[in-house]
Image: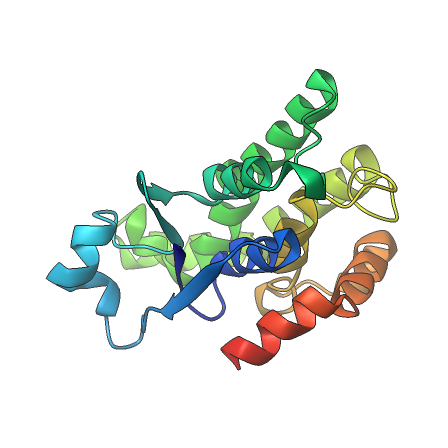
Length: 205
């Protein structure tokens, strides 16, 4: 059985939703970040990075959201979550997830975890000031250049959708009104109506 290690309010939500959408047999183990459970020897033995998500499989542990989402899609090809039948479409999906992971997520993290980049208190505060603009720029690119609607890649629901749903949920806390991005806002509302999303949100509280 797969085991997803997750924490509320983190990008692990995307993998959690994808597991539910794929209909895979899994269990979810909460990692209490407030209690620094991610820094305990027990968790570091699972994920030495000390972060979530981590997905324990019968072959080992996977980390990093794009890798986990890709693996989930590959495990359930009948669900069509990975666009595997079209090499170019599959590569576009990977490009989107890489952008979320390497650019948009770090832009958000500058508000909460600036100490990852600098020890200078003034620099940490400067990073926070830049967050709204960086997030706004990232979502403008997503809406104008990537998003097709009604889902990220048109009519086909993929693992990109729970990823977008998850990160779009951070906008308000980052000082950006999601209403600035009507297509993203409509997508978020559409996602919230999906039974798999509702089951996950109810489960994590």
